Amino acid sequence: MSEINKNLLSKNQKLSKFEITENIICIRFLDQNKERFELEFSLEQGSSFNTFLMRSNEELFIIHPPEKQYLDKFFEEISSFYGQFKLHKINIITGHINPQIIETIKKISTHFQNLTIICSNPGFKLITELWNQRNPNLKNFIEIQLPKLKVVKKEHHLELDHISLDLIPIPTARWPGGLIVYERNQELLLSEKIFSAHISSKYWSEKNRLCTEIDRKHFYDCLMAPMSNQVITITEKIAEYDIKTIAPLHGPAIEYSLKSFLIDYIRWGENLITNNPKIVLIYASAYGNTASIGDALAKGINRTSVEVDSINCEFTPNDVLVKSIQNADGYLIGSPTLGGHAPTPIVSALGTLLSEGNRDKPVGIFGSFGWSGEAIDLLESKLKDGGFKFNFDPIRIKFSPNKPKIKELEEIGTHFGRTIIKKTKKKPRKSDTGMITSKTDPKLQALGRVIGSLCVLTASKGKDENNIKGAMLASWVSQASFSPPGLSIAVAKDRSVESLLQIGDSFALNILSEKDFKEPLKRFTRPFAPGENRFEGLNIELTPNEQIIIPESLAWLDASVKERMECGDHWVIYAEVLHGNIVKSDSLTAVHHRKTGANY
Image (tube, rainbow, N blue to C red):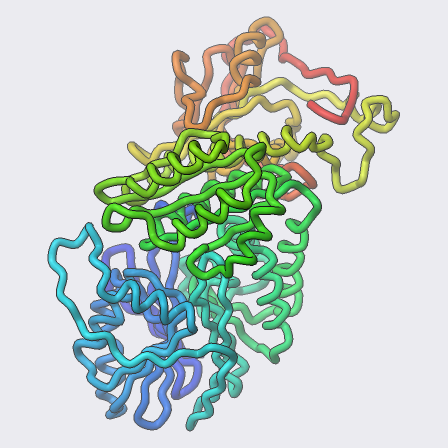
């Protein structure tokens, strides 16, 4: 695999080219400091976007055209490629469709006459709707003629000189236009969003499976989990192909332990499919902003034992929607406002919810808007008049949510999930060892005798308007290593602060005194409202890494997360201690004594 790196973009952006064969090239746009509000970027490892150019005689195939921020340099690349080989026709194969990608296709269409867009049936609907849609952010709008469209309704094969392509529609709730491409000669699968990871890597493929597993699992948890049934079906279908390389839309290619990786992807989904309570999340999204709100709510819900069934009502048959509503224990419905109205599919889905929904089950509504929010008002008034009870106030966000708002949305989702569990009288959590949760079980009585220091974990991440903070009471704490000095902490999956404890993140561990633990115990054990400031009214100080020290601390440690291990209903965090100090040398550490290992 030959590789060429170029500093062609902005200061933090680079372009890499990989020559797979003489006729197949991957252009990778790298962004080292990608800062986006979407959930999947929260690991802050940068990102990348993979676009493929394939040549057959006088035709150029562009697979996965990039978004408009890469448009100028991409246009230079295809113009050079087009002229070098004296091509006369361009085919754009795309399944991941949004307004930014439409802008890229528009520019290509204005400079090359013989252009065909190849897409799935839902993709055709998305492209035709977005092509002449006026974005309220844009002042100038120039109407451009829509190129010829070729619709792939089922699996389709293209046998050409030098390349042999299978086009496979993979519609999902989040990406209804999904269309993956399999090149038979090279056994190369271009998998679009599925199997992606947001990593800014200059290398064609990952070094080994373990080096990207956390990033791919994070991407899965953020975006794939609410549609796990669909993702399992797609993965099982893909596993039938002879594949040497998987090249997703984001991140390095996958060439090692492919069978194991596909099994993991199926397993991650199967672990989410249980007999637990379910929430149906119904939405439509014109520019992706409403979908991002839904993603954040779903991620928060998934921290509890409640499942999320994500439905894009623009592309879901009514009978499927009816069944999902009837089987749900709670409802979420979200809509953008377009031209002062809710999209027709949302109005129709709202009617179905009013007809089929159970008034004894909680509901929540959300939406984004540009200049007004009439669609959210419609959802609120109709559901309120219909006798539904709201779990939280309607969520109204202008354009896209920033990072603190994303975290607040996650907390709203977690609160909603806990409400569902309480309402359905869900039994207490069980560990993966199958331990009985009775307080009289002797094993649990013995486990409860394991004691730990009483601490408050605090975490702060981001700057200025993107700063987010969190805290929790922690007693499952232990020193884990001498060199380097390290500790381990168990964090429940449904803790809000868990999202601030990814590898590379910093936090402070405030060790409490047996004399002064009552006030912080009272403060940090009470439920916080979503978005509420955990530290309001406290005279806090900061560690060298700008983590929060609370006033009652006996001592504090400033640490950096190095490893995470999933353990049943908790994450075990291993962190290296970088700084620390004793504040009250004449006091002893507060210790948490329990009578059972069934709860805290």
